[in-house]
Length: 87
Image (cartoon, rainbow, N blue to C red; front, side):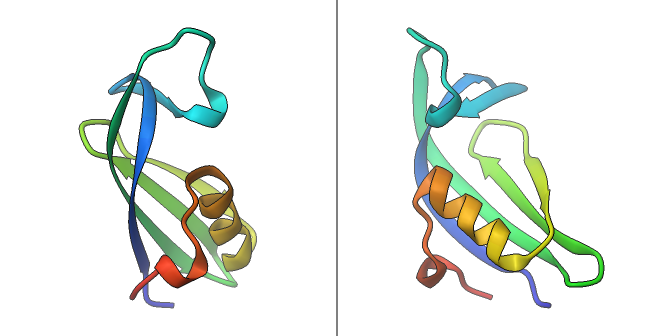
């Protein structure tokens, strides 16, 4: 599979090396609105990685059994729909 790419804006809480999105924010925690680059790499054999790179923060990734699961998580957390992804 060719990698898929998407970009969105999101509120990022925490510090550059220990960050989280609003669905995991702590009460009273400050945030910064920033551009977030997303990438999905993988295939059915090795599975799929959702790579998340908020501007000014360390890149993180999570592993999923299926492409649908990775895209579902991007939509749940960041509002990125399947139509937002490009090769």
